[in-house]
Image 1 (tube, rainbow, N blue to C red):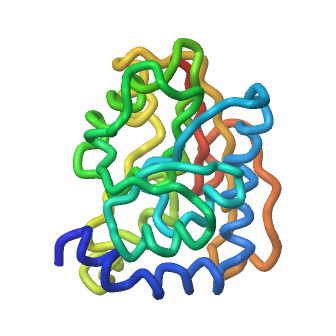
Image 2 (cartoon, one colour; image 1 turned 180 degrees about the vertical axis):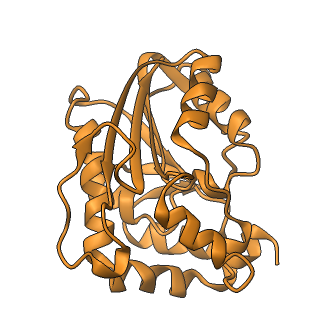
Length: 211
């Protein structure tokens, strides 16, 4: 089943996962929010591949792209302006945004092209912020074991922090900052965790780099 078809058919299941794992979602959100707290006020940005809009809504992001129609419909109900597009071909002009957020890079068809597109649409000094499961983490290894028994994980690719950081550097990004969370198995996380700076301990990473 192609990636897009999975999200078309299982949008409700996707939403339910977040509801059932609210402390996990809040832990990831807090790590990402630490970067947003350092951004200037009154700036414009997008989330790329925003799904049903959970992260965008929580972070006050009012627009973005999502190729899945079923996901878009749910995001629109959250008050988000969503365009039907893919990360590898952003429908925006050069030097357009102050920040670009990704939280689903494991499902991108071409992560390097998507990051190049983010660089293109960012203004000088703008930030790319990525939320990701570290490919070296215990959680990524758990998901890898489920690859052939799960519709969602079958098409996911979990990149290491080192790989994504190297790709960002090659494109021209600089001034890297890292926040990490999910220090326990997700089924053991009963309350939202406080993130830590750096990487190597938590399974979830939020990376910020600037153009």
